[in-house]
Image 1 (cartoon, rainbow, N blue to C red):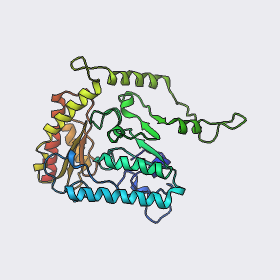
Image 2: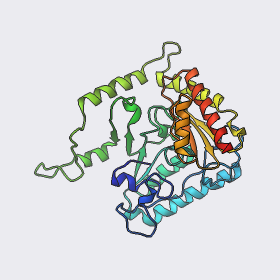
Image 3: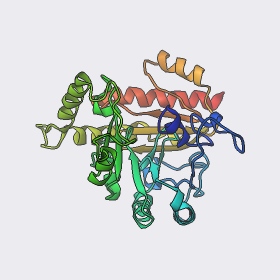
Image 4: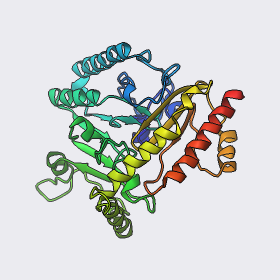
Length: 324
């Protein structure tokens, strides 16, 4: 998932994404057609307990041997696609390490490392969408998920935690090479087509909120000297692992996984969204069931007690869904 404008919708998952109904196979559509590659396998190191069937549309057979084979197959598919079509492609866009609304799937950093090398080889831009994963959300002591692979994208998209949710603001970071081309003008000083100036671009109030939010995230924790985001996310990850430790024992659960401040229970069957949403309210939590997923992305200020209230509700909802 990359957004709700036409261009962004066109690069979302065409099969199981939020906008898949606008992408009918072999039919004309209002969305431009894009090129998609095979998805990478799961990162089995992030599973909690034994998984009964793996994630939705699992490609690795939920075992280490199959996982390595699936990783190789997905990278082979990426290389083949780029080799055959790179002359008509501009960029590779992905969510690094964590595929968010595309299934809350965690995948190995090795895929991202190889993707970076292939983009360099075929002269394509690598665009990392870190709207959801940025500012420490994906854990592993990195502020941005792409750092877990030691990768620098050509374009980096940010949002969400940029303002802590208080105001709407997104940001696009780019290498000098890319930025200079976007901002370029012709010999008469007229901006070239890639330059845009939205009415609310660099809104002063939103930018002030972003400065305040990032200052809080980056400030040092006086108890251990680490940045606030790092110590709090590490703590939340531990709370999620503890709170969801037994979820894999619930009959209707297919997979349980935690990465940074993201906790996921994936069911074997789709959830009744309306029913589960109301039960969340009854239990005093606010969660968004999506397809087969019960997941949480806790605010960084949540205490151990708060996180356990959420995981307890997730466990109860998974048990109730298993009985339905």
